[in-house]
Every structure is written in structure tokens, then in C-alpha cells.
Length: 79
Image 1 (tube, rainbow, N blue to C red):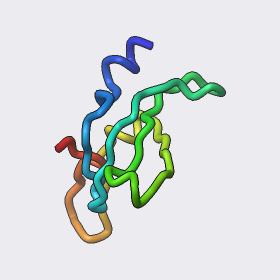
Image 2: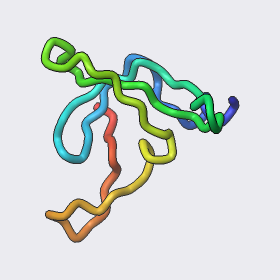
Image 3: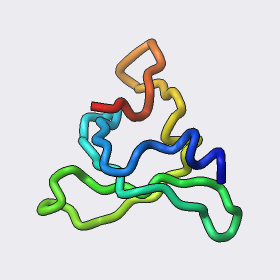
Image 4: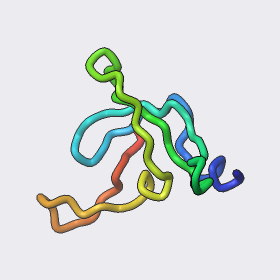
């Protein structure tokens, strides 16, 4: 639980995914089956999409290598 508080993004914060879409964090949670911390988020423009997404905190904070770049970059960048 301490890891969730320490590493998870703040509720209400806005982030840009490396592919360009913008998301707002609804909160953090624990995955029931494994107790791994996850980020609960949705597209910033909720009128367009009502889908709620869940991603492990470890993926949220990882560096990715886009197909169009030779350099790694964060999966999400806080705006």
C-alpha cells in the first residue's frame, strides 16, 4: 500500500500518452487477484469516450521505445 501512495500518479492529474492522447487519472487501486498497484484513468475528453482504463503502475512509469524513434521516452508525461 505504501508503494501505491509513493509511486502512483495523483488523482485528477492530467497526462499525455506517448502516442498523443491525453488522459486524466481517476485514482489508484490494487488489482484484486495479485494486489499489484494499478492506475485507473480515462480520456481527458470524457464526452468522446466513457471507457475507464486500468494499467499497472509499473507500466505507467516505464520507458518505451516508439517505432518512430531511436530513443526511449516515458509512456506517460504529466502535463
